[in-house]
Length: 421
Image (cartoon, rainbow, N blue to C red; front, side, top):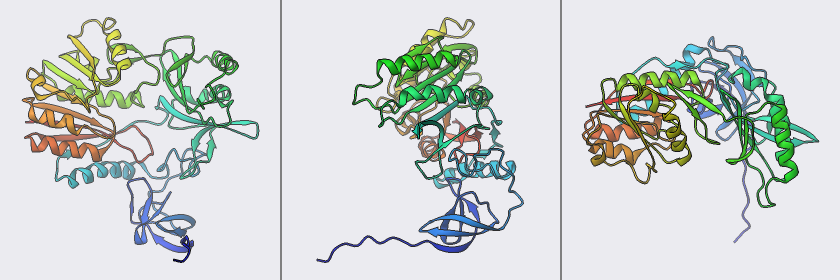
């Protein structure tokens, strides 16, 4: 038997006519070749390698092309679509939802999207690396492990932008081991920056006492509220708190939170309006209570989530939010142990906001229950459409879907679906 030879496709230069934008935000052209940073109606000359292309010359320009507002755009992998005018960009996001529903045989009213404004994200995941004695902090380049050292970020809250130099200094102690590749998960809260660091080499004993001291000094100098290492407190000057409707909640380290307060408020309005008149509601995959406290203004709420620290934070916040209906909460893995149909006998409505993978098991139990109203919040139209199909097969009608663009200029889209029967 002869020796195996590894064959590689050679780059070829081709002219590509772009006819649509693919699911990841790249232009799709001739022979289904993906060309990033292109738009429908454009013709480009590109180096093509397999199904991927890199543009070397712009032959025609779409009238929908606009100047990106970030100096890092095109190299930074954080944003894919800053160069597209708002109207066609939002229409494309809406179409992603319509297409996902159509593949499951579902049709409904898909409303005009809510778009979070620039400079509204309160959460960023920033990668840190040491290169040539200098700390780089930012996002990965497109389709690469290379790090873009950012100076500005037009999606981020101005407070996060202003904090970039302090965060760069804070990253230094977490790079003491050459194998460490830390990511700073940064959240802007009412009491300041909350930073949870992951990706630090642990086999050598984790962070040294000296590095911890230097991290605390950098955090103090940067007026950071709290620094944790994979959930373990390294430094805390103040407890990070956020406002969720009528309640103030102390965040557990590394806890989930909607990326934009404006988007959270928009989602909350759709959710509460959809269950208006209900007296008993379940809030499943509730996190720290994003919707729980809003729902409890008019209905008693049972909240459940797999994260015990989130449930503890929610429970602790109840006493500080007077005037609400009764709230009960439990730590429960709803994927492995969904709320059963028999447990929903006394409920008027169910709200579910699962992780990206969706909630097929929980949707099945909702379908088998006697609940007449359900509201699904999702960051993945594909898994949402699958869960919606389960509910439709159980007699629910998907009445409407509201797209929520809180991941600005990315291919990702949030949505709220309202069901009734």
